[in-house]
Amino acid sequence: MKIFAALDVGDKATHVCVVDGDGAVVWRGVCATDPAVVAATLERQAPGLERVVLETGPLSAFLYHGLRCQVQ
Image 1 (cartoon, rainbow, N blue to C red):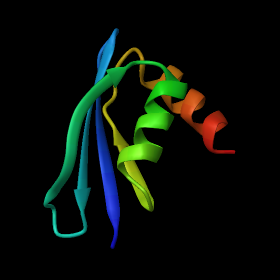
Image 2: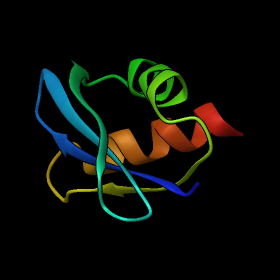
Image 3: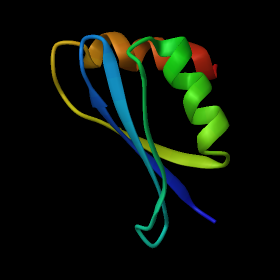
């Protein structure tokens, strides 16, 4: 099953929505806006994750580069 996640980034908290290939919500929750915490949340709640959608904003570059370091 394909799994996708969307991140709504705030300065202290990031809202996460995980959906399957049909668009059905698999999990929805909140975690700290920290690359390690977001990566751990996605690993736990979205096994087999194929793609992450990240909103643009002041913290997007920070989170993007931090998440890239977590998965490599």
